[in-house]
Amino acid sequence: MIIYNVTVNIENDVREEWLTWMKSKHIPDVISTGYFIDHKICKVLVDEEQGTTYSIQYSCESHEKLQEYQKLHAPRLQKEVADKYANKFVAFRTLLEVI
Image (cartoon, rainbow, N blue to C red):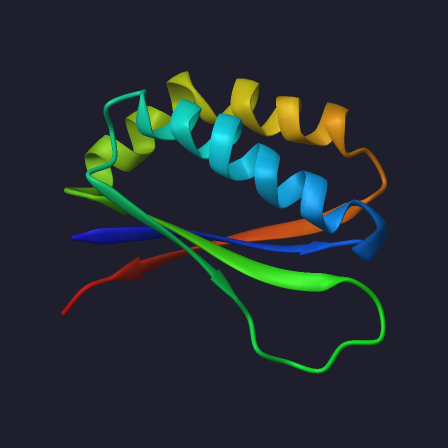
């Protein structure tokens, strides 16, 4: 099992709107691609001067399926977020293997 983890720091002035949009639009769009079997959205518990940090974790059965998702769907879905929240967030992605 592979976890595709997206860590996002979002500016506080758009945080609630972003969180609602992620739950109602973006995450369902990612899940509807058929490559993920589960997801979680977690708030990272750190003291920050600017923004709020979240970890969105998508569970995938294999590295091969994740690579296919990244090739076929990720660019379009990432662009939607970048266009909607331009200059309001930073994100980085990591892969985790469940042991």
